[in-house]
Length: 271
Image (cartoon, rainbow, N blue to C red; front, side, top):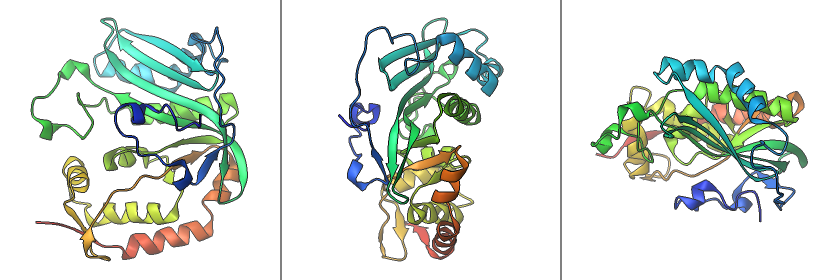
């Protein structure tokens, strides 16, 4: 079973990840399940350890600011390298759900493997606001409005990466708005995809994000280069904490290609 099998994305009906189309390859291939790991993260970090990292990231302070004064942390171990983290209210309502996987990945571009944290699933929801009846008020895939805690989540992931000895983290955003949230600290591994993404942001810089994302995923954007309806495609977004990996992946050639594509690709709304 590869690291992309058993994904929460697949479980929710989004079985769209083709490992052969990605720029990373799971080297280990197999997850070995062991007893006694249920209350630890990656069979290494206790709930207290994770609590401290979350505190360092500012997570609990921000949740308190959002009105959640008392929360509880749960860790569910699936295997040595595959774990779920929940932050819940006292009433057992989920505020934050992260499914993280840890494995060695081969980067095709440089033909070297590095230990990486894969963010398989990420959910944050403000249950105090309740489920909004009008779907237009929510992003695709949401049941509740978000908590606006992406900075704290990213900080936690990077702190965890340093503690576990990973070279960084990556995610495969399912929706355009997910990619926007990650983009502050993550970049697409593919310069073509990164350039295309930045071109979309440039062409619609005055657009509301919810409206733009909805248009992209409902076939309402025209790719003026091909005169065809723009089709959103997935790709890995990487945040490297290892300096060598950062320089190797995002070199001058990468930057040059991203700049050229982002400045020349054009998109427009389909009326």
